[in-house]
Image 1 (cartoon, one colour):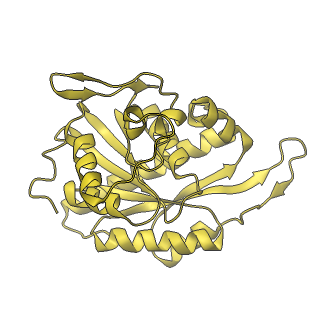
Image 2 (tube, rainbow, N blue to C red; image 1 turned 180 degrees about the horizontal axis):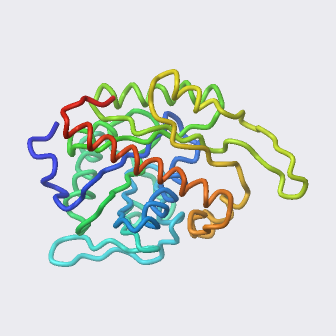
Length: 270
């Protein structure tokens, strides 16, 4: 744990890591929409893309404005009222990053301490999939409020997600909950439901390992279309997925509140 966990981001109230055990479960999409849904509650929100190997937040958020430097600090672009930063802003298109741990650690510190985040209620951090250097560096650099784990209902994804949960627990990072993404598909034409990747697996896994279940996000073509267009589906208050993301955000806010109360009472949270 850092000597002064708030020194790099002293005006940020809560830091939320969005993680997954494996790629392909829609973690970045969940992170972006969760940030939008939190902002819709009236909170001041930042979105930090720490997935340096596959940064996608600017695309998901329609980020066309590059950051610029003011008085030695990076002024982050603002999209839909949310401050965002990503390695994608600093790399030529299609260029790959091949970095070892020290460079990744330096990037994490710069994204925290060298960005003009200002006063935020939530800083949502999109982590790379798996259990690697970024996760370790982030946990050692600041005191994370907690982690949100994204999984599909598929048995394989849930098995790998449990490894991410185990990692955060070893790093003393509270698990705020699990989100089941791509939960079920409802045909927009006939209304028939099909559980393409299964259904309810994440909820059951959450019960078995005693962590909160934050909610289900349906599998829907509209999410892909919204993501590709750079306009998160959570902005659409009336769509099923927009409502689902807002419900997940509400559940997350409640878990953060409970965690804060229990921390104040000296209760250790896992």
